[in-house]
Image (tube, rainbow, N blue to C red; front, side, top):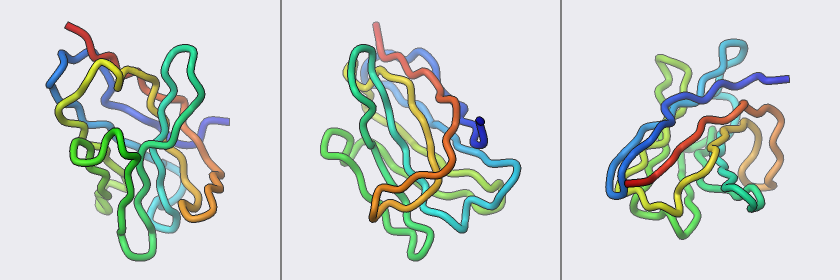
Length: 119
């Protein structure tokens, strides 16, 4: 059952930017950690980034560190993933999930949004 909704994906040239959004119409995202994940064709799903509900601390996988930024928009009950300096290898379906970053437990997922980086 889809409970989170991602948006903001699309086609972008290498070096470009996109901003993904994760929304939940049923529950406040503030109560949980929020993670972003991605799955490229033929590959396993991988964790991309996480933002803590307790102190707002953020973590990133090495391949996106310095290029992606995760943040919360409390007023809109959304979590954003700003993606800059995109590379072809960032092409994937991006998913958000609510749960706990520390023990990698995720309760609610979205359907995903496609990000394609190509010239």
